Amino acid sequence: MEIQEIKSEVWNGVVSGNTNYSFEFLALKILLSRLRLEVKANPLPSTVWRSAAELKEFFIKQHNLPVAQRDLQKILQNAR
Amino acid sequence: MKPVLFALADVTKMILQGKKLILAGDETILQQLPSGHWIGGTIPYFMGEQGGVLTREHIYVTELSSWAKRSVIQTYTTDSISSIFADAPVNGFSMIIIPATSAVHLSFALNAPRYDGFATRPLIGWISGVHLGDLGKISAKVFLGENSKVFEDRAVVMHVELPERTYAEINILNIFEQGSGDTITFPTDSFSATDAFINGKKEDFAKYIVAKGLDTHLPLVANYSGAMINTSFQNIDDATKTVNFYAPVFKGVEYRHAKAVGDYVSSFTSHMPSHNLDSIFFSCNCILNYLYSELEGKQTGGITGPITFGEVAYQLLNQTMAYISLHQLV
Image (cartoon, rainbow over all chains, first blue to last red):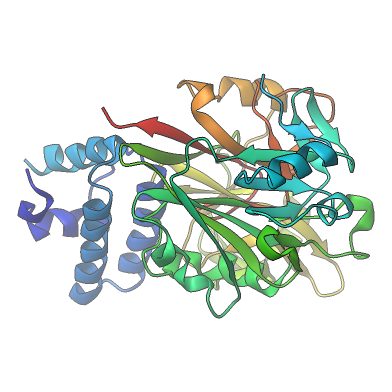
């Protein structure tokens, strides 16, 4: 599945911290922690939307890395 | 094991041959090097071929010439450091060296997670330091080899572009884990704290540490979505009742005091990455691990690198080994 086709609810769920994933990619772990902290501190829809957009952009920029692809699959599997 | 520590004459020759180099060494030896395509930072402690070593006569060399497609060297101040991820090449990595206790060190430590494009490009590096006997007497420095400039108030960065099907991956090796004690949070992002919330209740943090008998050689550990990130204790200032850290604590992040570790070297080798160690082309480890675990003369599973006053893997880390490896897309 193309990253652009992934529904916004999926990204929103990841940054809201509703599910714990066992990610491999260090950059993702560190970034996601910061995004979740921001959502927790200010749980407005605008914060969730902004954080989700940043996470999506992260995957777009890293799409060719095997470790990012493996972590993206974990998100997609959980969303199905 | 390939040689990593070289004498002045050898490094001079490499520079004059036009090699792209990342160097670590004592200030007195780095300042004797000629101009060339290199960056460097001051430190006289290393994990060398023979294990942990203190030397002012050798330079730790990371050579990029054989595989780097292109590299650009830049310096950053507190005003420009926020663009570091945006400046990085699309396919490559950036190596940063920051002088310890400089304004840019403090600024990067506190603000990096909010920089534009944070963690979207691989950023690895270290905080330069000094011989521990020189603390307070001389300052840590970084070198810009292209015009033989020395800075104590700027970070130096080599942005390295890689060939199309090669990519860099950054990882960390942290032997510390969260203990089972109290959950500790802090009211602000800061390198120091007077108050902390212990399981949600506000307490005098210095008093808490003393009352609990916490071993301040063990860091505070936060769980960043599965990555254990340390913040190390620097000291407790009795006069001001302030606890000082070597990296900032962040508001809202939940910390726990680390579990005790038995033998560092055994723990380290048991945590070693399972993939091919030859793919690791640079690593650095913390001066606190070197000191507290008495690494001088000991080997850590064939891993070498400068011993540093802080490590960078996207953001500032403490008491951690950071490393970067190269891989090929299949």
